[in-house]
Image (cartoon, rainbow, N blue to C red; front, top):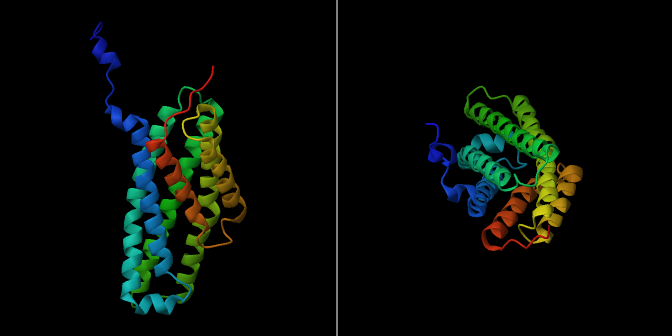
Length: 221
């Protein structure tokens, strides 16, 4: 109704989920879920090969558990993006807004694509007519999606968050400098070591914990 101030100022989202603590909770949930998912999948799909995974039902169960955590990690990451973007709305420009949002969504899309490929591989391994060559192709594709494409998008996301975050002094500055270091490693060497991709959720966890407990530094005009 015209003249009704509540109709124009009411926010449909509860204040907590738009606050620093909301971003921290979403980031911590994402980091824990993604680390758990990636660890389970790495342990299950070890370098023993196709036959070892096919004959060991426990490994297939670990892989299924890891894949089951990926959608929930994605949901938490989407909320983390939304809350952080809300908190940085006062100082972000269009360039960093586009890079921040685009890299985050591309990371998530690539992560889901890799999870779908892994789920298809798991179904194939359990079948009678499983093909070792096709399994090797699917595994290589999944590792490439994660280590090369998803992690480089994660690096761009980390760079954009660190750059904008330095303007806000919302957490200690060393967290953002650490983000630059993590982004550099992910850009240059994300495919060199199988555990390197864990750096990204680990940094998000550090950032989220600092958002939860650290007080914002005073900023001068």
